Length: 322
Image (cartoon, rainbow, N blue to C red; front, side, top):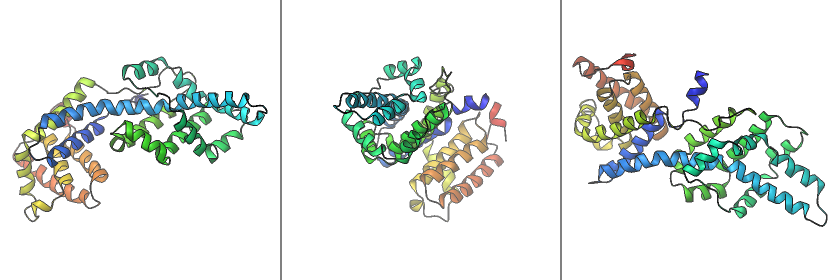
């Protein structure tokens, strides 16, 4: 039960760190920029991530509605194909889509966040033309009755296909959500978890947006602000441990990740030191070069040893966990 709860937090601390990193990176590249503008964009980006998730989750019901129209078109033909009618009915009867479509909190979230698919029949028809010959669909036709797990797997497979392999769909989403490139990994991972946890008796479909929204927003705001306010000190701590390096040749990404890690070590008493360092080493794997992980780890290790010897690391509560 606890595991399910953990999996169902969408905007977790790692993602908040990523958004702060992206904002600090953009701010650092714009000489003389106004930090408050980048901070505002960062916070707005959190809402956009959730909107993108809702938009993609709504693809299933939207696709079902399109197939229902295609079914009526087939039935209206002078000589309709009984096989095609049966296949459309099979797809339209997908249990996973029905659970999502009939979930009241999902409908309310779409309305609250002003997320809507307007008339995109042409797009859906082109996607259907890409999909209908795919093994995913053809194998689904072979079974007469489908379990909820088979229906979940079909929807998950369709979402994976359109997100990863359909250039048409990707261009469509990018046009509407500028955060697609930055957020697609988190959003698609959350979608897969959403589908995995669906049951025919499910009353809950959506993940919690935050574990504790007030605390999360405080964390990400403070992380951004303290990195900006203490930039000189953070840079000096890094420079002291990279004297054999040409400072101009250290990648900006690496500098920002190290500054953020040291900032957490110094100014976030309730976050364990190992958690902070490990989180930014993981981000280095995502955003920097293959060699950066070792370099950043070495620098941070030296910095934290000095900070400890000078009694500058003060941890409280859960931050005391070593």
